[in-house]
Image (cartoon, rainbow, N blue to C red):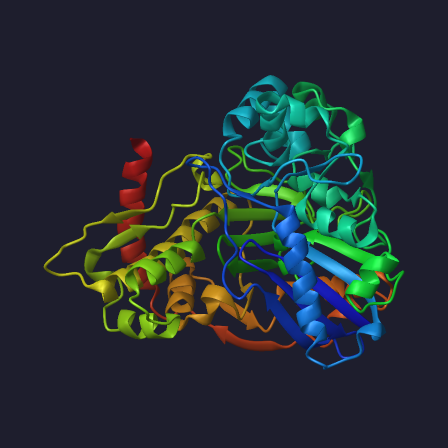
Length: 493
């Protein structure tokens, strides 16, 4: 059986087709080649059009089919990974009512704070494992108060991947994992949280049907199948947020296993069999892909909004046409620590690790007579690595102490400079794998469609590329402590 995986990212949609027999991708394609636009009507706002995602998903599927590497009629199941925490709302005709308020939008912070105060911190954390914060439920509360006419037309709410599945199948479903990432799930009662629904005044009717994550979420409609050269009736057999999916794609399923990713945003994601939570909700706990009431598996997620987006911004605005490898060549001409230049990469909205404060990207100690663009290139990547260390220390406070971290050989981990800074700043070796979100989604579809007897079987051919070991921890530790002192001074203001 062939398996189609779709990864609905912030910057683009990627599609991959995997042969279940070998667990290897036959072909992959991305659309568009350039980064998709994020609409920001006000500072701290971030929206994208679900219709744009659907258009780009179709083009990515058509593009991968056009490679000729396989027969599209042999595809037997579809899996979807998606950018987490986005709010999609549709009417009874399954038409979107407004653009999606996406993960890095900050407007709902006050709504989540009011919910936390009303529900009570102890009850909120023990049942939701999080503060309502700036997540999907709080975003919906913003719509309810500020766009009441739109709110009154809502038939169902969805996460971004639910929307793509709906367009493929005509069915609207969700899962415990999806509801938990929206802060709609009560882990103590294993049901939709009445605390959240009652405080915000949401009708239970707006919640889609809850199905197991690895199961059919509908079958592809004939007219859609025809347009995409697929067989009608094949199931969408898996849907997951991008970070749980990234963990799945790295075979991170068991307690103590940890994954990381450094794309537009940065994440460290560790699996636990305990309903753990951070007292300040600086790191967040969600139901993992293999969570069940009888075998609780949760993902403890440390997220940084501003990581790769900072490196991309520097490339666009200061790179003067250089490629990323060329920027790294320049950066390597400067010493570890960038001659004292320190950079905070926090220019992409409210950061959870700072209790949902907006810090903003910042340069510190910039000396016009000393520092060059090479120092800036290096200081950006070091600043991103130091941010991972800061977040990992919060995870350590909450009992997550990885001896190794798995990551895909992609995004910022393609940079030897960043990888070196990451392992030396954190003190944790990194195992690199040739994983990919869309490939992980395809394998997830295989699990859901019973092409594999178990999740373990889906990764029986999993191969490690290499291991990066810390070798310069002392010099990076000194630079990190200097960076951290500047950060703590900023946070105290």
